[in-house]
View 1 (tube, rainbow, N blue to C red):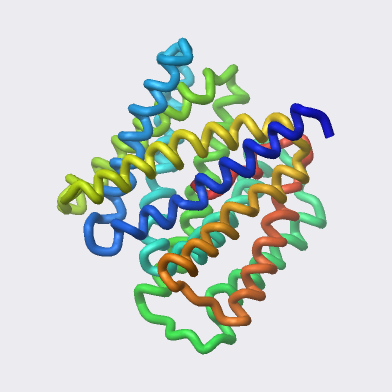
View 2: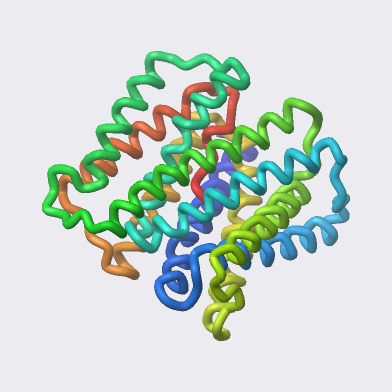
Length: 305
């Protein structure tokens, strides 16, 4: 293993660890202090400011081509729905469960890739997809002594919708890259974050809820969320993916949902039954196998942000 690969592994581990705190930070202020949509708005707006500043300090161009801008706006549109659903799933179903459900995007991404890019779907992929379905059923609590309240069921559904929305976001970015060369990653993510904030601001206005953080504690959590997850975590994972093999990247990035689950247990006393833990193991294993659909395509190695 060369120096480049070692650096890529370190970057991926660091990035996955950073992003694993995303659902924890959302839950810290999303239970009673702020609406899930408002959290997404500030996370992306502050994240955009940080990323634009980062690009400027690195002397990268802050502008992108008009032909790419429309795809950037569309990516922000889909990512706004990703955060809309995921933040609610975190609060209703738990940090760990929602994150594992969101990572099922690898299967939706592959199916969209089949129709849009004519990517090949292998027998291994279908086996992984069926295994994931079984895992999700167990993970949701079927066969366990769990009370299926209305909010909990909505959390499960929102978690699965998160995966669909995130898959649409990833495919949009990939499609834009097929059309022409994309700008520097930091600049691209800054614009996507800005558009996401715009759409989430509209959603928040439609909901009619207060969008301003109520206290310094909320501001502090939002700044950490924007800096650690929306900026540093994204950048580390993006750079790490280009330096190591697909199978190793897919395995390392499973740290994100695993760590999110661990943090949820430690910080919020979230609990899992034996059957749910079995379902989590099956689902994560299926996600890993599904993410290796193509060794040359890093699209599905993304994690739920």
